[in-house]
Length: 363
Image (cartoon, rainbow, N blue to C red; front, side, top):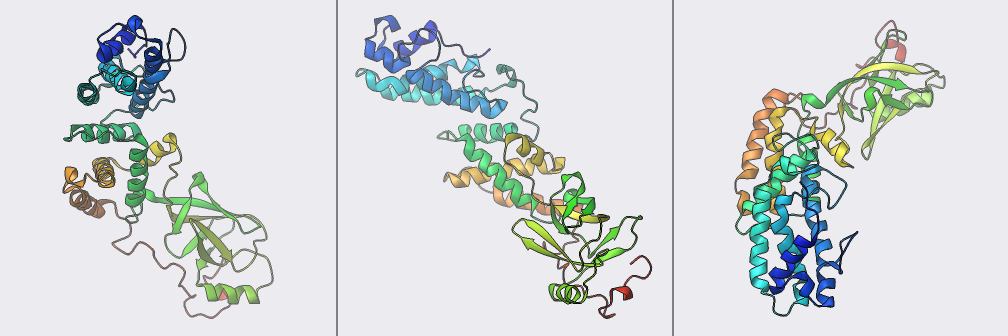
């Protein structure tokens, strides 16, 4: 069940602040607590507390609401949170006691978290690798620290994006290697099948489909300029150069394609987009199970470093680095070579500049 704001909660807040029932409070004190609520949207400190707890609840449930998925078992946290925010309107309130109660109630609420406490049953649990499971793992660890740390969910999400990007680009992992079909348009544009955003080409050539035959070879920039200067006719490109422009690859062909061509190529995919909760879960789902624990630990480490509590995760960087090193032998497709292979430095075997000299029939 979720928290439903009603008279019982009004009275609990009032009693914590003044040892009086809500009905006995002054008009200003009622406004401070909930804007003299009777029905509809809750205002005042109670409304703010509902929003605060709702944001934490949403960190687990990945819901778009702010106050409908707060488990009823969090009521003590809600009452003390609302009382703490309304305390300035109560001169006799024992603020230090309320603050201590709030810290304890907040800690107990999240440490006793159970998915069954939520009305929202979004897929994924704390054992899976999803945005909500990483949030939960990080938030619960922070609350177990002494003193407890109350994390901003946005900070956890930013750390997830940072860690996924770091590990994705650690090396040429086999799971980000794709065999794609490249479609080469008459405007020399190139798109990859399955909406793969190409980071780089593996090897130094692309192989045309059987309808066209042959292949095209990657050459250095000066060579492609020499070819373009000497070849005025349109046709099937035989050579190309890849030029990085930000996160994109620009394909430069030595001649303009006279029609649409398709070719096969092995490529590595760019770092996945993480612009939303859905795309972040898709990015996390790209990693094999062996990486799940490493990603969770490294997210926790990054968050703790950013809030100045790195001692709370002492040794995590070495631990995660060691795990990633151990995964290299199993998942690294680069053969231990540097990240960026020089695939644009190939001249055509010293056989001269005539494209007809390369590759025989089909070119």
